Length: 350
Image (cartoon, rainbow, N blue to C red; front, side, top):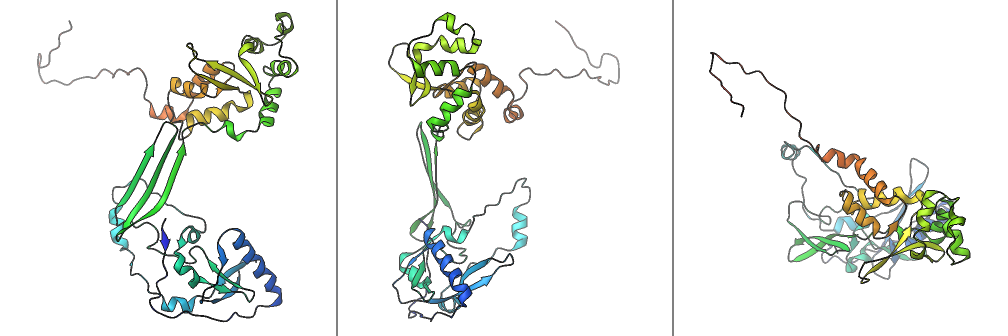
């Protein structure tokens, strides 16, 4: 992982005494310290370095926690990394149509400090010595350098993809970022059994089937189910394949040869759009066509008129419509050709 180094050479440790804080600000300092400890930003220190803290009032009235590192900055050996010329940067953008910017919240705290240099960030509040675990100020060279080549290692399977972005700084390969993405649909995992059961009971077509499954395993007669809606009757036709798992209704699908089977959640209407967004619109969905989206959806879910809903969703997808051209080619309009003399241009129709 990329780590930041505070290079002070052979300079002896600096130890400064804490400054007095007004009584009204002591509680505020303790609160801010506790908050940073809980967030994993600082930790206890037992080194020989120490710097005093300063509490600065922001414009909105809140307090900013600062440490006076001026003495440390004076002895720190800084890398020379001048900014590129503005005119060269503008010339490099010539002909470009898109631009992107990246920003991190509290970006300094996203890069760890090397273990041997953490004690140099130590500060004291008068009640103990603490040190930072991550950066406390900007460091240009710690983040990726665009003037050096990037190394991208990738790995993929049918279920997950992963990547590691790194750069070679000197003789060491430093990691800049990790990436991983599951290709398996995770929407179902985000729902609790009670939430799904409640949604199923609220669905008019599923409720009669679920209530009878909860009360009895016996299949209701046609006379009992006749007053129900056509959708309920279609679920009733699947009675032997419907089973309860933690009070939730599932459909058991088996292949013709019996070599494989899977459990499909009987999806209520209130959850259909969420599932289709995941199976079609998301990064793992890929805006595929009807058949691939249908196959992916059927791996985990089933509902009445599933195919019709998938076809409608893919047909009305704005992103797919913008990418795909018309199925039939339009014919060009007839044009008049100007010629200078008779029989200069001739055509035969066979």
